[in-house]
Image 1 (cartoon, helix red, strand yellow):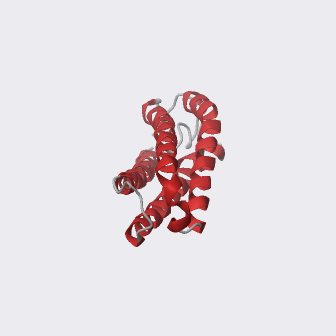
Image 2 (tube, rainbow, N blue to C red; image 1 turned 90 degrees about the vertical axis):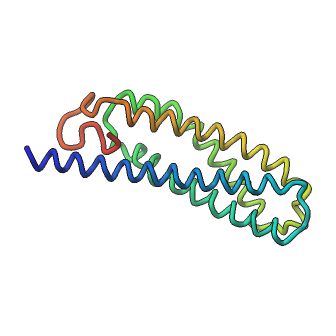
Image 3 (cartoon, helix red, strand yellow; image 1 turned 180 degrees about the vertical axis):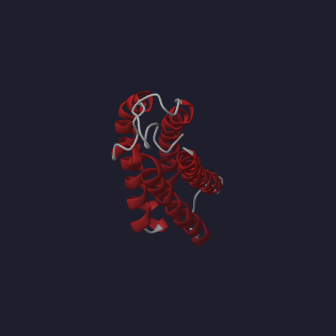
Length: 165
C-alpha cells in the first residue's frame, strides 16, 4: 500500500511538472508575441525579422509541448476519468483547428523574407493572437478538468484517475 501511495505521488508530481512546462512555454510564446506586436509599424528591419524568427520558434515549441504534454496523453487513452474525457472529446477538434492556424502562420513567415511579408504581418499577428487566446481558453478547460476531477472517479487499478491528478 505504501509503494502505491508513493507511486501516485510520483506520478502526480511528474504530471504537474509537465503541465507547468506547458504553461511556461505558453507564457514565453505570449511574451514574444507581445514584444513583436509592440514593434509596429513593421518595417523590413533585420531586428524585426530576428524577433519574428524567435517568436516562430517559441510558437512551434509551445505547440509541440502542448501536443506531447497534454493532447497526446489524452489521445493515447491514458486518461480514465469520464468528465475529463468528455471535455477533451468536445474540445480537441477545436484545438486541431488552432494548430492548423499556428502551422500556417509559421510556414508563411518561416520561409518568407520580412521584405515580402511585412505588409501582412500586423494583420496576421492579430489573427494569430485571437487564435492563441481561443486555444489557451480551451487548454485551460482541459487543465482545469484534469486538476479538479476526483482521482478515482472512474476505473480502478494503478492508472485510475490518470497521471494528471
